[in-house]
Image 1: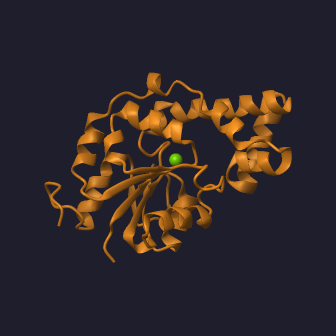
Image 2: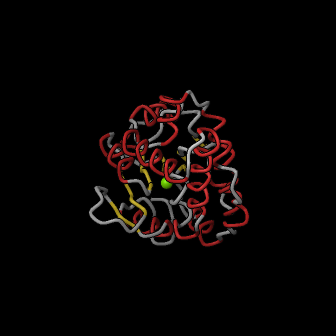
Length: 219
Ligand SMILES: [Mg+2]
């Protein structure tokens, strides 16, 4: 089956974890738990840990056990200085311009946050679509339901997609659905078809798959 689409995760995938943006979001998540649920620092950290273990996503625990409205949570936790942290990444834009496959973003965050990130990086023209957590009915990756919604919308099967993500469980789902899985990060022994330390390694993966030629020419 021919690869037609590249599905990109957003946070810690299009930009490196080390830049600290996602850390700011994590701080906002803990602040949300303190303010909305009246928890102490220690309690908010413990509750977040518990929901991450149980559901893989803090929001799901908050919706299931506290009746939290997802948009209230999502708006609050993404109020961080994206533009102050992320600058234009011309190298990334050049790489994207050399990849002739269709590109979309699949993120457990919001449309607005994704827009801010890709605009700050200067890569927004390259993405045909942003599939956010609202589109996925607040059922986050790695739940296969989220992938099915995206694939149905695009009219593609798993074998026609390549998924790029920093979250190993998401890549496991992607592989189970027949996608080619590319892990971005420094974790060890991740179950993926390819492992790259940063997003700019993707071009080498696509050459290896013969999806682009040495000079980025479509084959
Ligand atoms: Mg991520």
